[in-house]
Length: 348
Image (cartoon, rainbow, N blue to C red; front, side, top):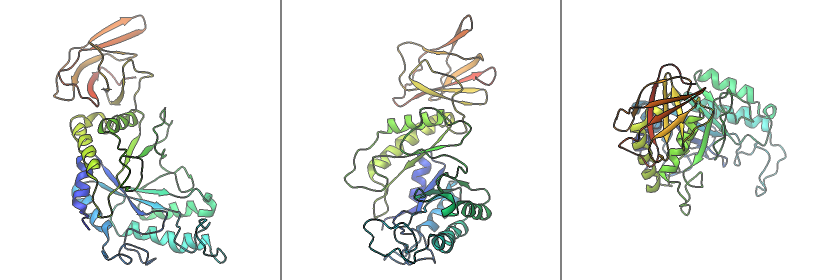
């Protein structure tokens, strides 16, 4: 086993990530943490007999990232979980979903939320086979909040809305209204490690997806599938490092920003906002100057985030329409060149 929690967290941090969502249990029911509820777990059913969640919790605390848990409600291994899969020949007679929830799922969650320090998110999945009443979703979520008052809970405990929405493998065309949200997406086509899946998204594509999500007010949960030995494939390391290099220079346009206040953009790219600043993430710089129309406030300054080059902008007004002209900076980034505009008031 080559698992190194310090390297995992460092890789995430260097990529610009602020939190880690780790799978504590997936649909197959195998627990990746030390639990008293079953022997079907990493500390009892493997030669390693080690709890990686304790290592990750310690490293997240040391390196300043939030630790979060993905936990499947669905459990193909537990005898009380229903319905059975088509390939599962065990009789369903005598099984009790209520017993599964109260005597297995909830005690497991209690362990996760009391043994590893502060937890940022409980990321449920696998709840679509039952409704909220059958899963006792409100009772479960109430227990979670009693143990971790500052926690966020996603919307997959049979679609109770809770704190935020989770579109999967897609970025919404428009930002969800009055709702926190987070796109979860794979780096290739597979959620777990798959040796033959080499259809990797490029670092440029992933960076632009991050920008697109931020411009709509969302977060990006990017899936990383380690090998059975506990290491990330080199293709993943390369992409995370490239995204991290872009974030080190341009992260100000992502962290703590709100969605783009403009109804439309006159260039190929996106924009984000923070206070009186507007960030223009330009994917493809046009020939000559960049034209930006639709601003209600006037610019008081402009600079390129890469290198800090100050840019002299001009403003044309024609009736009710104002167009801002920004000269091309010396440094152009193939993923996105970011221009910070200081405005006379909050941009809208």
